[in-house]
Image (cartoon, rainbow, N blue to C red; front, side, top):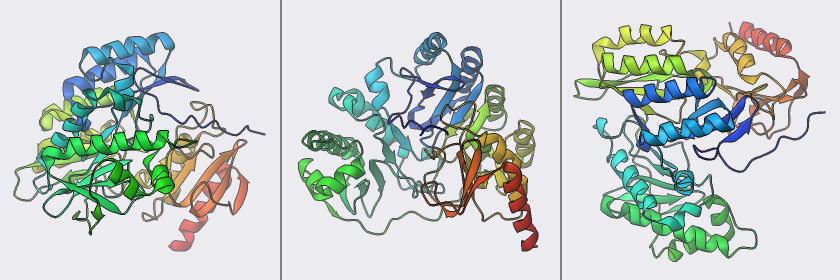
Length: 422
């Protein structure tokens, strides 16, 4: 029997790497999700030199470097800090969890510049050492709306557009504080400090805002922060476009292009080459996203076809209809100590079997922790003792309808279902 997977309760950082099956993991957190071509090449070269060259893009838009050793992790961190891509203070670096809409100032349809706001919050964190003790997974989200809104992404504290003002939400709540962009960082600080004070009063201190909202109510948190809360109105976020392929802006000569990473992974050599491509076609910048995609900005729409060819030559995704975009897969065994199946390898094999059903989603989880996808999927496979349990239209926490399946049996089921749809 496979032992129950250990839930860490924290995420690796640059200065606090985490051990896994293929070595140690460390994360690089680009400020406002922006990575210059030079910075991308530096990260890629360091990941190849000090790790195994595998780089995963996390759901928080961070770059996770794999295959480090305790000694090489330290050398890798020195390179990243020396380039100004991280803080040398471990506590500050752990608390620097701010995610922003990826296109930021380049999106004319956005309600505000999410990158400016995100950097204001980061600057506030630098000057507020008390917040460096926030729980490791505590995250702040800045959603500027526009063509790629973060409407379906949640965080402990969320900044979103509102009628005539920015709105600040608490995860799990229904009320908001209204504020101007100039006071946004102070509003976030007040709520984060209120979270710390109220959590400390509990016998079992909550580690996330949602848990505190459930324990004391959101009104108590806003009041502790000295803020007046009002009921949230309907969001001003329009329907977003696909994050893969050409992303055009109204009345703008320049566009963006989304590059999908198969199951969230890019190899160091491919990242280095993609940085070169960003200079060849665009403004020499990459943007990280929470959707397993990197964005190139400042390019001409006429170059999209040639760019697509170059992207696909790297083994990356340029077609928004690629079936791999509907598949969530963790790293699996042997890279993860908790997994008993090769989740990512099996997902790649199963991609062809679901090609005909673009609306279907598949989640392949190496164990019950469900790291790759917390929500529901058309089909969820959970690894157990080297085989899979199968859940239909549910999540890894739901009861399986079939258990102990091999990947051959699952592929046969998918092929049979595809044949019935023809």
